[in-house]
Length: 120
Image (tube, rainbow, N blue to C red; front, side, top):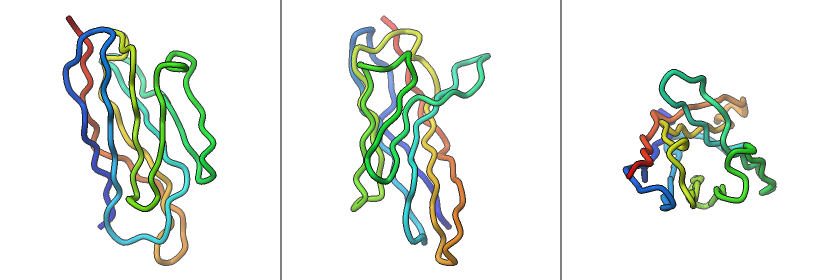
């Protein structure tokens, strides 16, 4: 069974930093695009950052210059370094990945999420 497991969430003061990690485990051939989404209470889930296989990245305007997404294909992992955190960054953060199965079919997978709370 393939799964994505996030870690690194928690409570941080405004202006602080957190680093989220997400690792894929199970049986698959390769990983394509990896992304971080977030969902705040009462709001829709939104894309925060995305990184494709080549390493090219894309960010939501609200996090540009503060967040950095990276990946380690040897570890089947994606990371989100979050700096200068603001209260409005409070949300459940979800990892998402496109993976290729042993049958060479692409499928999408979500992690269960990790809570990030920015508060003094």
